[in-house]
Image (cartoon, rainbow, N blue to C red):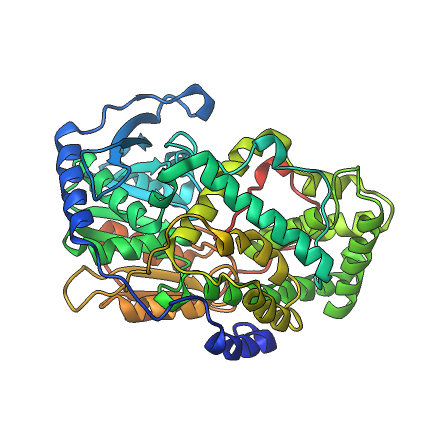
Length: 539
C-alpha cells in the first residue's frame, strides 16, 4: 500500500512556500453583512409565497418528460432585495416512492435533495436523471431530486467574458517552464480577459460570488417549500455549502460534502490553487505508475520515469506538428489533467498515447480535440469560474508574486503549475471589488452533523482541506477513501462509501467521527471509451 503522503516532495515544499506567499489581505475575514442577510430573508419569504411552477423543460436541455423545470427569482444584489432580479432555472424529478429492494413497499417522501456539482460554473440541471442508476435508486425513491443552474450559468443570467467564437483558437502551447516572453504574452491575455469580463457584464459582475451562491441556495430552499435544506455538494459545491451552514445554520437538515474544499479564508483562492498544483503532481505520478505496471499493454515504459519520457516525446512532437491540426501540447495537457480527476480515464489516455507513438494519431485526436460545438457553454463556464474566484477574495496584484511562487513550485511540480496560473491570472487584474472571505465555522449544536467525503489522494481538493472542513464544522463526520484519488466519490465504485451516504441521507445514521473505507480497485487496462461518455471537470 502506498504511503499516504499527500503530495510527496512537492507538497512539502509548497507548505513552506505558502507560509510566505502574500496573497493580499488573506488574514482578514468577513462577517455577514446585516443588510444582505436581511435581503436574503426578504427574498426567501417572497420565494416561499410564490413557489415554483414546474412544466416542460426547455428543448435545448434535452431532458425527458419525467423531468420538469421551473424558475426562481433571486436578487442580483441582496443588499437591495427589491431591486433587479435574476431568474435561476431549476429541474426536478419527483420521488418515485419505490424501494428497489422491495417492490411492494411504498417509500414515504423525505422532501427535496438539492445537488450542486461544483465548478464554479457548473450546472446540475441534468442531475435528476441520475435517479435511474442502480446506486441512486434508493435516494430517488425517497427524495425529489433537484438540480439547478447557479447564477451566471447557462440559462440563469449567463455571464460572458469573451466571444465564444474566440474561446477555442486551435492548437496551443503549454510549456512547463515558460520563457519570459511567453509569460509576457500570457499577462497581456489575462488583462484582456479581465477587461472583457468587466465590459460584457458591467456593474453586475461583482454580484457573482460564493456568498450570493449560498444565499441563492436558501431562496431555492424556500421556493421548493422546504423548511430545512437537504443538500449534496461536490468540490466547489462544498465550499458554498459550508458558507450556507455558517449563514443559515437553522435551515440545515442534512448536508453531504463530497471532495471538500479547504474553507480556511487564507486559502481562498490564491493559496488553494498553489496547493492544488502541488497535489496534481502526486496524482500525475499515480497515473504514470499505473501505466508502467501495464507496460505489456501500452509499451510506454515500465517505470514512471520512462512513461514521463514517452509523454514528453509526444508533447514535443505536437509542438512541431499538432495532431489532426487540432491537438497541440495544451490540448494534450488538458486531456491528461482530467486523468488526475478520475482514474477511470486512465486506460483511454494511456491507449491514445501508445497509439500516437506507434503512428496512429486518431485516438489522441478523438480524445483531446476541442469540442467546438460546446464553445459557448465552455466559455460561459470559464467566465463564471473566473468571476466567482476573483470576486471572492483578494489576489496578488503584483506579477512578481505569482512569478516567484509558481517558479519555485514548478521546479518540483511542473505538470499543472503554470496551466493553473494562466487560468487564474485574470484575478490579478480584476476590475470589480474583492470581498474578504467569510470565516466558515459552526459551533456545537448549531447545525445537524454534516457528512464529509474525501479520497486520500484527491488532487483537485487535497485531503488536508477535508480535515480543515471537519475541524470548522462542529459535529461533522469525515469518511475517507484510503489510497484513492478520484475527485467525487459518492455513489461511485466504492460500496463502503455509498453505504455511509445511504445511511445518512435515508436514515440519519452516521459513522464515528472519522470512518475509513478501503480504496476502490484500480482500473483495468482496456481500449478507450467513446468520447461522448467523458466530461471535463475543474474544482
